[in-house]
Length: 74
Image 1 (cartoon, one colour):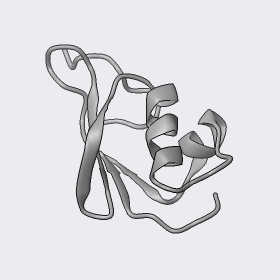
Image 2 (cartoon, one colour):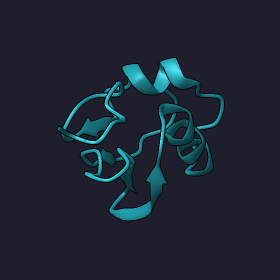
Image 3 (cartoon, rainbow, N blue to C red):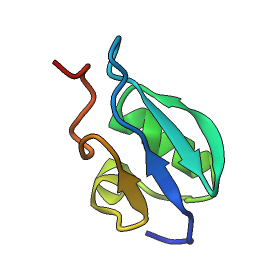
Image 4 (cartoon, rainbow, N blue to C red):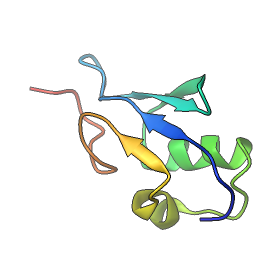
């Protein structure tokens, strides 16, 4: 993935499974899907990335589940 960002994706929320996203120490929003996360990262400067790039990226620190976890915990 081009560029170097420090990305943290927090655990899915207990209500709707959405995940807060922090880039370079700044909270940039709450994503509800891998597609939304991909859009956030494009706005943050990772141009030309797609969902597969994001799911496989070593730049992302996933908390509470990986790129497939978008449901509230049970």
